[in-house]
Image 1 (tube, rainbow, N blue to C red):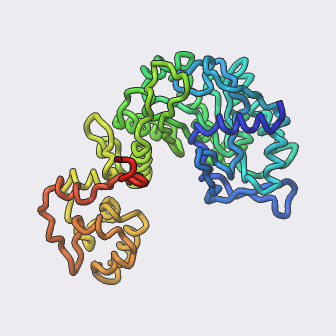
Image 2 (cartoon, rainbow, N blue to C red):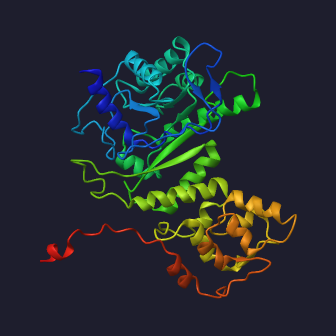
Image 3 (cartoon, one colour):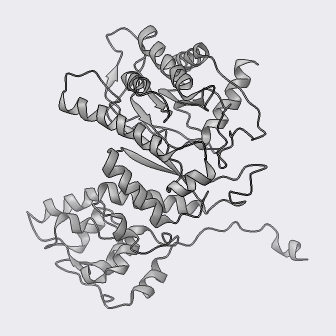
Length: 410
């Protein structure tokens, strides 16, 4: 098979893995040194094509052959899809050539399981080793870790990769047992734990060898099983706390041709994935916990964002006096972000906050107005029922207009 044909198959097969962001990579440059490539401390900026491919990282699978038969996966053993496999040298050549053509800034490499977990992991490590040691590649490398692989191989991967990821895929052990019977939650968490221990060792001893400086991440598929958003967020919260993950990524399940009956025939709403990302951000950056965002079983609201939903459910905190409230509480006001909360606290050291200050900060005034008190403003609707406010603030999904509706009706 020609290399371009392999690339077409294996780049397309990689689009289902969403965990390819690169924030947190260390600043690294080849300027004035041997080698090629660079990263910066703010992470690599990505562009995404309409079908989900990331074009600033070479995002590919080593192979889409797989000995596993995970029911939700397009590359499962029983799936009828075109198959291909790169050699180690081919991936190295593609990465270097694409970088020299200014197509990419780094490599995101995953793989189906071939022969065994150890053999597959050896191939992934060999690619990273050649890039770093033979070609002095200084760009970003993200390797997908095979959970069942030997701990020594995972340690070797962390020596060369900026970030490692172990995909848990589904939020409950029961779902993994049912839909991915060859996988084990125990081995997945053992792999995550071994990466965390290596990261902790590096943090405690700065002179220790470099290990995955951008940390580790994981992915959960949304809508492949019956798990609701409360279950997904609780699992994410546990993973953040237990394994110090940098990110949990959420990927809406995409039904594929000839999918087995064990998975849904229709995808979940894409808005559901979006709301989970918003809720995840609130947990990582705003101090919310999963129980605050979803205290009961069920899914996040699709018509309003999770922060607004929390505010409407906790009207006892509102309207909030911005001249008296703590910064962490100001950041919980719908329409005020972390940066503006900090700016408001700094401003009130000089004078009292006024309504016009929020306009100058470009806050979302329609969203913020019912929830705040300033030196010159108090909402007239501070006793309005939450359901009424919700209806006025709900996001309405855009609808594609019909062309020549009259003719179609006729």
